Image (cartoon, rainbow, N blue to C red; front, side):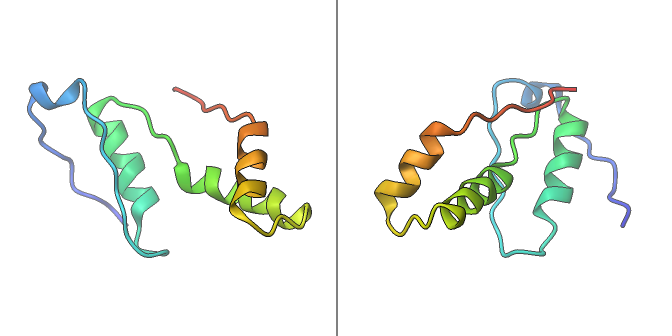
Length: 82
């Protein structure tokens, strides 16, 4: 799917955090990557972070919020700021 080139004023290119919400499979990651690219910003994929915590929580049989919070605090995330 080809997305149209965005026309964004220079004033919007600095100092903004943009959050995109929606159901799974709606194209949030595609739109987010394109938006970050067009604005010259960075993409922080919190969905991937959430899935990583869930992966460890399942593996460790974490059954409550406190256990999941401990796992999340223990994990170290990094991102490629191309």
